[in-house]
Amino acid sequence: MKFAIEYHIEFGSNDGTSIDRHGTIVVDEDTVTTEAEAEQWLLVQFEGREDKLLDPPVVDISNLDFTKIVTEELVIHRCSKVS
Image 1 (tube, rainbow, N blue to C red):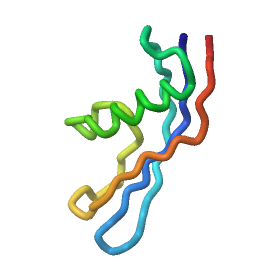
Image 2: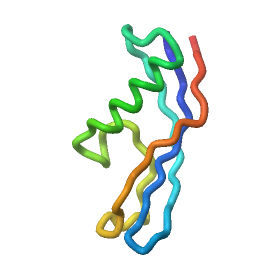
Image 3: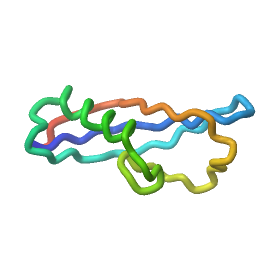
Image 4: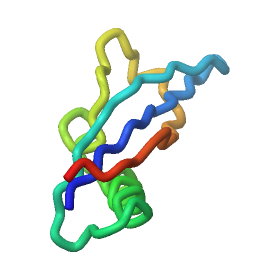
């Protein structure tokens, strides 16, 4: 089964401001059979990623100053089966 997940990552800056960047990913894993499992899969990918620029979940990072980013939070908006 495939699941489409809409999400955003909230980047918190050391000056107290935050920037949200939105993204969508399709999860196509044999072990993922429910929406809850798809959301959990994405959370595991987010928490375990080594390269924040290339590993999922990916968002547009243009104009982000990573020298000022102190927190990142993944927020899932919607998960739905696509086929």
